[in-house]
Image (cartoon, rainbow, N blue to C red; front, side):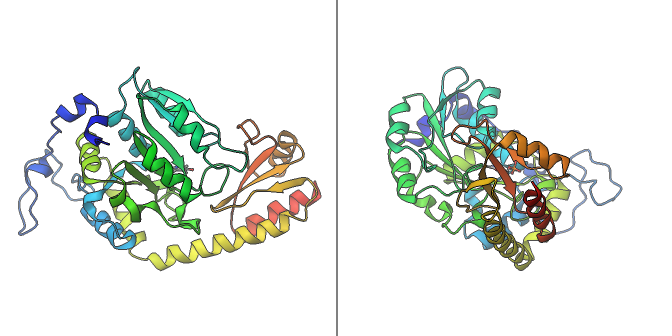
Length: 344
Ligand SMILES: *Cc1c(COP(=O)(O)O)cnc(C)c1O
């Protein structure tokens, strides 16, 4: 597969904006910076942020074992995903393939970019339907979105199926690993070299506890990363975000400890929920949430709201009839959920 052929012609021809910090950026000696029309009075954020986020990427390299050349950062995964659409999909011409029930942003971004969506439902056990995906895709199918662990079903996709899709889908395969830190499965970032059509996205919004700073991560080949870099806004990761990301990633044992607690709470929540009558099924979870089937999702959702607990009602998603999604909270929050469900 020739990856170049998947990139839009206007993007290939594009000459990126060259920022002041691109044209001169030396740290060898203290310089007087009069090139970016910034306010000269120091207040901590009067200068533009590093457009290449070198310190953030250096830390990510250490934690994830991927070279900086293979990393692009975005204002949340949502920006990363939007850049991928804009680099690859010709509006009103190309399409993407999604596997519902899954994360809603793929379709929203497709609609924003005037790109068609081909939907191929997951199988009953929430796995990709390999044959149906290959059959549904056509020569205009540029991207296949695989979310693993998948939101809202909480399971990871079978790695043999994912590998077959990577080898046989004739476009880019995006594996959204927003929940990978809660999973027992290995990340696909260790296999970037094997698959030139692979893009993996991750985020600091979930396990890293930084949803408020908006930092999404994209890992791929240098060719794809360099293409996305050409179209990203130069200063897309603001200074405060970079500082907080650096602070958090410099103390990774704190993150690991929280992940451990969330996973323990998840297991405890499962065993408590199993004893509750209105819960009909708890799907296996590799993430920080549980998908559960109840007797009547709309009724139970509203009752929980009355009790002051907000969960996500997924009953209108395909294959998710009467399903609610519970995020794993602190032990106090989970106890409240269990207690209120028991009174219902
Ligand atoms: C929460 C979530 C994200 C995170 O998006 P950000 O923009 O990085 O906060 C991405 N993908 C999935 C499937 C999610 O559930």
